[in-house]
Length: 114
Image 1 (cartoon, rainbow, N blue to C red):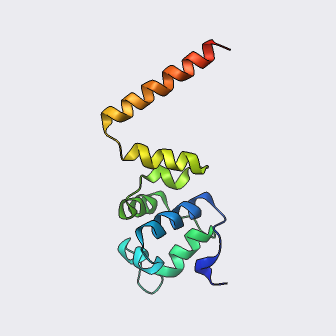
Image 2 (image 1 turned 60 degrees about the vertical axis):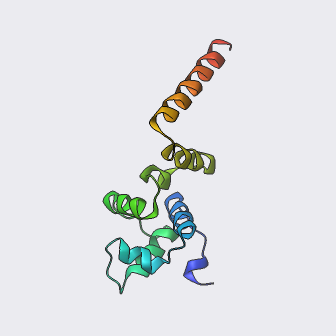
């Protein structure tokens, strides 16, 4: 099995691979775009995706910008939370506020009914 087909062993690695594949970018291309040396770009991204190494936060921010996802997406522990983060990022400020208000009202209603 090649290193590009190994399953990620970390949440970060899983999210990085998902975002990269969704954009149709190869590991070496992403690495080069992010500023890594061309000779090591693919191996470094592969190590991040496999969970063997974790990049510094500043590099994660660069990856997020290149892949068009918010930085917190990479750290979402569950798939539903990751989906929420992506949707939230693509909504307007007014939509975000309305959704948050609705969720908070629903939470307070459920809490007071217990």
